[in-house]
Amino acid sequence: MVQFCSSDPPIVSLRLGSTLSADDIKEGDDVYFECHVQANPPWRKLHWLHDGVMITHNASARVIRSNQSLVLQKVTRNSSGNYSCSAINAEGETVSNQLALRVKYAPVCATDRIIIVGAFRSESLQIPCEVHADPPPRQFNWKFNNSGETLKIGKERYVKNGSLSLLNYVPVSDQDYGTLTCWGQNEVGTQDWPCFFQVVLAGLPAAVKNCSINNQTQHSVEVQCLPGYDGGLPQIFILEVISSRTGRVRYNVTNPDEPYFLVESLENLIHYGGAYDDIGDDNPLKAVIYAVNQKGRSQGIVVKDFYLESSVENRAGVLTSNSLDSISPILFGVLLTLLVLCFVIFVRVYYIKATATSTTITTSNDLVSNSKQGNNKQDTLAKVSASNGSRAQGYITFALG
Image (cartoon, rainbow, N blue to C red; front, top):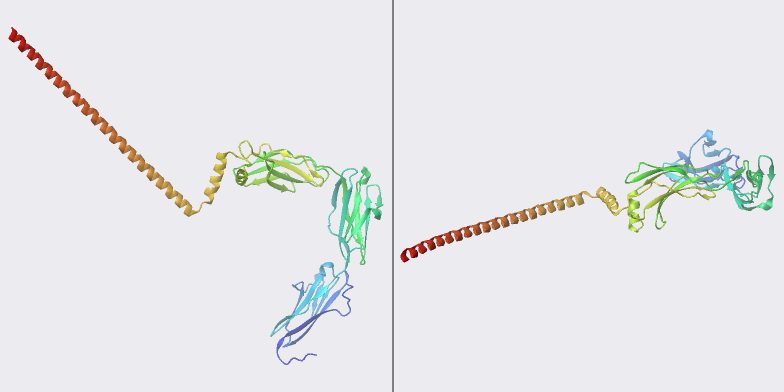
């Protein structure tokens, strides 16, 4: 026994209950751990951890803490993991070694739902049955049931690969459509509840119908259709926006429940298409809707009323709108200043042109006025000259007389 001569943190170790075998714990067993602590000063708190998470006393969940023991009643596979304990005294805390708990359990189906398997007549199917088990299953069994009979399927028709069994199945007639069940068995026991597969006569889904456009804006549009026959299998719906010229898919969206789609960011589609020369007035983007099930997808339906404003002017309008939305205050101030300067320059140039035009008109009028005055002076001189000529002629006549 260790003698403590000074104060130290606790010395802690964890052990599985002395009556238990770590390799032989199964679901439904009771398990207990013992936390051994040596401490000076004495420990004042003790914690239990499962995979690093603290465990609290919970009698309804069959988790019982008692002094330095932890009891787990009727453990399940979820109880597996690493356990540890920690003790705290005035000098500090010490965490014990980790102890791995393995809880063995009989096989359980990997999924808790019925799996629908659609098949054409004479179609060869490979149906996987996956289970969880520890240890892995030693063998599998398959059965087929329809409304008339239950048949055990021969082992030559399926193979085992670890926790998976793969059945080869070919439905030939209507009587071959029904329910397949699969279950595994290991050293713990046989699977309580089998895995279920419903084999149905199936085909491709029918195309959607009555598609309409709602709430179309510059940025988004809603598309609503009615579903067609699902082909006997669960179906989902896909909308693709495709380039009419190249067939390239520019956008796609899936709805697992109904043929309703909200197509957003139309301006980005236009810009992206324009960047690759994939969109234009003679090459619009079209929307095509498909229904898809396990067997494939339906004929595509083109939404007739779906359109994108793809002309150069409209693309510019979209880009300008987006650009304005993202302009920073500083850039906006610079642009506003440039606009004011342009306006001032325009007014100045207009004023200079107007002044020059006014001066030209004034000069022209002065020239016309001066010309008229010159002409008047010439006329006056001519009249004076003519008058003097008449007088001279009179004088000559008088002298001759």
